[in-house]
Length: 240
Image (cartoon, rainbow, N blue to C red):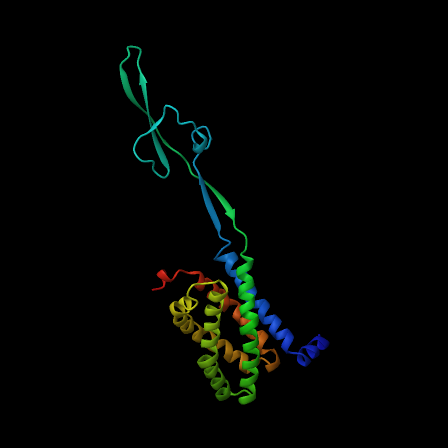
């Protein structure tokens, strides 16, 4: 353990950046599995009384009365009595049960790769150099120093990382307007992040050694990135 910690301190860039990127991508997998693309979807099959699929049932001599409802169909048949008089006879109004067949959709690995790319190219590297720069400018702890670093982090770093997330992913997805998600969702994300990250960064600047702060931020960002990934998948119509 001591050797690993010594190696970590002597080469902090690689484990910090790779650790952050891994956690960033893991957040998207969690979001997809629990809230997004991997939800169980339901396919409806409507069998007849004999257990057969209505889509395969012969409709010869059968007329559907009115428009078919979602879960029930009414059948009318026209028969002749022995004297040749035509009668319209309504058969049973059959209420057909709906069979729910769960279909588990797979993970969208292309989306996860895009999230990992944005996390590696910007967030991991930016946080590594930003946190080191803050510590060099305002070294040490104490309430005043920690409060100042938290304030600067939320004033400068937070808007940049949120903007890079929305704009970067939209660009990689080939969106016609890469700024659309940013315009619709930035302010809500920033307001939520100020509350969450102010507390987390206060812990980071006061308790975590500077050499490990990027990895700590990556761990804390796991839950935050799940929120961002889920929020990005929501349609803008529901947010206005």
